[in-house]
Each structure stands twice: as structure tokens, then as C-alpha cells.
Image 1: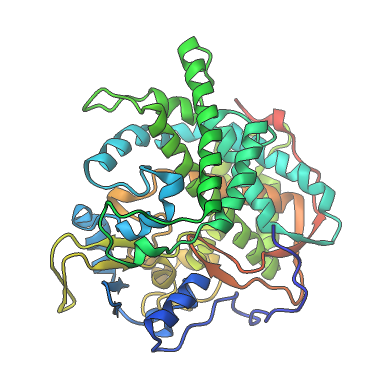
Image 2: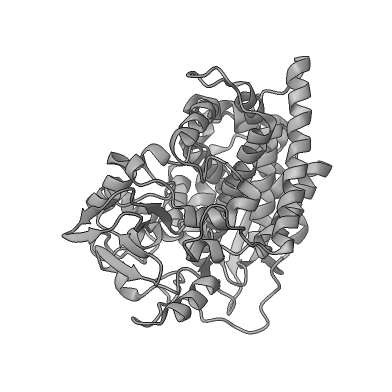
Length: 478
């Protein structure tokens, strides 16, 4: 849990939201590593916001960051199997995720996606919408207690809300459930204990060489996996008895691979639930927290979202089609993920030698696609650092949306829950802004920092006051 800042931080400029600084152009490898462990974003040089491609050399491997939309398209869409997920990223995530779809490659990944993708087909959004609604109503009720104008660390609240959505849609239980609450609490401890970079990510170690993780990292990962296994075992028993709720976990656990006819084993399902929680909870919490802050920073846009939500939500009956009545809110959420993409960088590995922009890449080179830099690229976007939710109605914005907007990745490895996340973010943002007026805490504007996801260094502090009476859970169509 973040603590309220004791001293003022530098406020954003009147026209631009906060952005981390950049490092000096040349630093030693050890100096870069120190900066990188502190924050991925401020460890990068400013030229990456203008360059089409940049090369980084270490004593053990080479990395190439690609901002050229044609190269991004090549790596993510046209030849994704030639650029698998880098094992260097797997090293820090292995204790919790084991063999989850987020870090596997090849035939294993293909089989996992064949089983997982049907659960996130667009038609199933209607089925999980009531669970999202219940979580948002519960969050508004929970926040009433602190909506008295005092500073509230909003990232803690969005983390709670995003976790509640995950448990309700996966296992049909609220976060108040004992096991769900324990997973959430332990996951926060795991996040603070888990470094993104460890020795296995930096050195070319053989597969048999032991990887070193802190005792706390291993202990929290083991606890989380044990709790998820309890939930998975209970759901398997309900499936066998014919009493299982029709949630996402049920769908995934009963879907057979169309090529082999096999379903996930219990251990495999634990791996997948771990990444659903990590990706679905952590990234959604990040995006929602930044969206709320941006609306506090730009009250005119906040008023537009509040007015739209007040008109869209019928207090007597809520339907899934309500989401189509929130175009302004959706644009705000989309622009938030342009400025603050939840996952700032994707790391791939070249399976064979390549030539990018007349530069030779050796086999095994790390190919980095950075949504953070691509989304703010000075040669792609007009006013790249500005918050302009209506930019996507302009020719420049539409062009950028097609070629340089990848908050959920793209191509074969696009996030299977991208439509889920957009629906969730739009609904939760509209519900919270309908219920509360948001104000900045002057002198405590957030400083973006990134490890696995883009969060605020000292939290996001806002003042909440009631705007409209809360809505009720039992008004949604089920």
C-alpha cells in the first residue's frame, strides 16, 4: 500500500500530463542496470521518442528497439513465430507463472491459445457483463466511505476493483470471499518482492543451472498458487457434479483442444489462472488508475464522461448494450492506454539472423517493441504527450490507431482478453465518474514508473466527493 507523499512532487505542465525523465545518452552497463531496476522508462534515452530503431549492446547480448511501424508489423503480425517471447523475461516471472500462456512459445503456446481463446470470444462479453457490473457497484459503495474530500490513494482502490472483477468473472465469487481476499493480499506482497531482472535474465546460463529468486518471491508465489489450486479444485468438483456456474474458469476447464481432444490438467489451469490474475488485474488496475487521474487533471473531460454516464445508465434497468452508449468514456480510456500503456515493452528474440533497416541482427538478438515509445513517437503522433481523447477522430489519430497503437500487443499473440479489458475499463470508468467528482491533490501529482507494468512511483492521490447517488446491483439484466 502506498503512503501519502510527505513532500511535494513536481506537478505536470498545464497542458501535458506527467512523463518520466530520460537518462543521459551514454551510461555504463552497470549504470544502466541500476537505472533499469529502479524504473524501465527513465532508464531509456530521450532519442527513443524520435528514432525508428536503436541498438543496445551488453557484454552478453544485443537488443534492438523497433519503433518503425513496418518492423512492428513484421515482428508481431507477419512473422510472429520467427520472434518468440524472450526467455529473459521468463526468468523473473517463472516462480508464479510456470508454463502459462503469457511466457510459453511454440506448440505449447499454440495448444494453450486453442483452449483459452473460445472463453474470450466477443459474444461471451454479454455473459460476464453482470459480474463486471456487480464489481463496479460494490466499488462505488466501498468508496462512499472515503469520498469526503480527503486524499485517497486511488491505485490501491483500482487494484481492489480489478481483482474483484477477475474473481467474479473467473470463479463467480466476490473478492470478499476468503480465498479470493487471500490471493489479492499475497499478490501485492509478491509484486513488491519480485524483481523483473535477475541473474538468469542477464547471463547466458544453461538450462540446468539453478535460477535464484528471493525467499519472499518463492514463498508468495507458492502461496498464491496454492490458493488458486483450491479454487480450481473446487470448480472441478462443481463441474463434475453439474453445478458449476457458467464463468470463465468453467468455460476454460471444459474446453478441449480441437486437435488433441485434451483439456487442461489442474496444474496447467493453475498456471493460466495465475496469468489471468496478473495480466487481467495488474494491467486493468494500472489503466483505470491513470484514467481517473487524467480526468482529475482535465475536469472538462471529466464532466463529459459524467454527463454521458448519467444519461446512459437507466436506474431501473441496465443492459449490456449500455456500453455502446459510452463513446466518450471509451475514447478517454483508449487515450489513457496510449499515454500510459499498462505493459510498456514486449521482448522478443530473433530465431535466425535478420536485417532490419540495413542493420544486421544476429541470431538470439533481443527485439524490443515498446508501446510506451511507439504511442508517444514524435514522428507518428501530433502532440504525442498531450491528453486528447478526441484525437482518434482525426486523420492523424486514425492512422496512428492502425499502425502504432498496441496496448494489448498485436497479431497472433494479441492479448486474448483485449475486448474484455476494453469493456471492463469503459464500464468501471463511467461508473466511478458518474458516482464521484475527482480532484487532484495539489503537489502530489504521480510520477510514472514501470517494472512489469506502468504504475505511479508513490501512488495516485485524488480527492473524491459524491456526484450522484450510487446505482444498484439487481438492476442489471442477467
